[in-house]
Length: 218
Image (cartoon, rainbow, N blue to C red):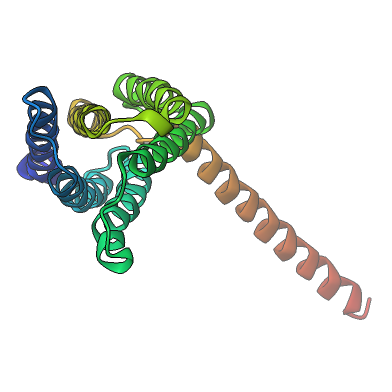
């Protein structure tokens, strides 16, 4: 049994994101959403997604988008939690909506570019995450001035659920095909660079031998 089959930590990260996402969604549906709950859930989710991304890397699964997403979410959560004490007033939902919309735009574009450039093995959930976050970014940026906290909570909950699904898809793909590369085009590019380096080294050896031959007396 390989290491990827013995370590369930990526699935633990995904389940944690599902729990956080449903918690934030239920708070919005029950009209109990709050800045601290949403920001706290996003901060925990950021740490979990970063850890899940690096665990996926160790398992040989697609991981780059997860680390990028976790890093941006951590910045957003720290902004939501750290700004109110500095300005001595609560952050307005409009500001949070704009920040979350910018995150969704960056995440969607990054995942779309990753799908186009590197062809990750876990394509389905990555594509769904890219489309969902791009749609959410359009809605949040369009109506950020009038956004309510419950609307921000719904968007955040959907983002967390989609991130959890992306981790599950990546982990399952790695377990189904452990011998395959996580990124098709990235692996091909790395192999091409290695072949080019080998050719250059071979050319240098041939050139050195030819130069030594020319220097030898006939």
